[in-house]
Image 1 (spheres, rainbow, N blue to C red):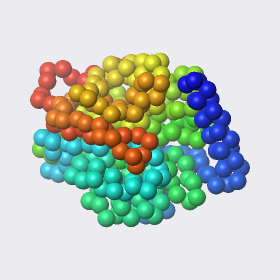
Image 2: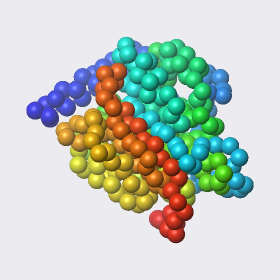
Image 3: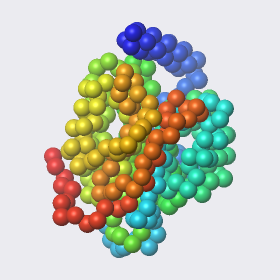
Image 4: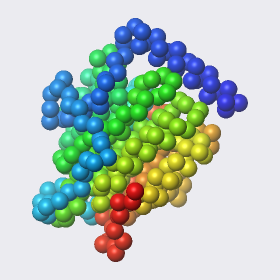
Length: 301
């Protein structure tokens, strides 16, 4: 039954996206494009993550930035704000959060208006443009970031990209920076090659960061072999997956598809409330910077 459902959904999506591409409704950028709250939305910049990119903060102790004592995080696939009650839930869930890690953000007038009225600095990487509005992953913070870069990986069948946005934020009173990777994993392929390549590319970038990490998003880890790829990556990077005493995580074929991984941090609280405003339930986690440890995060080959 699962295979029939998946196959039918895949066939529908392939036909739909092919029709939209042929009609010129969807535009796929050749290079990753970054939009920023501080810049004109029409002036997008290309900033591709590369294995040799420098992400770790060096220099003096940060006078401004995220508090190492409390970092509250919302990770949520917003389903392109396609349901009527999304704005109500967005305001409720994002209230007082330090970091918003959002997937399937659709930068139409409604989301633009909501963000312009919020206290957040944000960056977005565009996976594709539909009806002149960008679609992709968006990361927002109450504090300005140090750096952003993006990764693209095309869906093998429908050819639309999935995007990853990597950002770093200073931690006030320290000389460390927090790396936040916002992930939307490849979905519609029965094989593992493209999925594995997407996370291998991400791993090469994250190896350059020696400080704390939050890796979160919609990983589309709907089969055990996909989860095994994530387990391998988390082991290589010394990441832990956030666990919940009880959860309402959305599962596909019995497997959770949304996750939050972390390193160099300690969990204060974590929850997964249920919503009707998206086909994904949000993940809420509050961290604090871990006490100094003897172990260093080594750059392993």
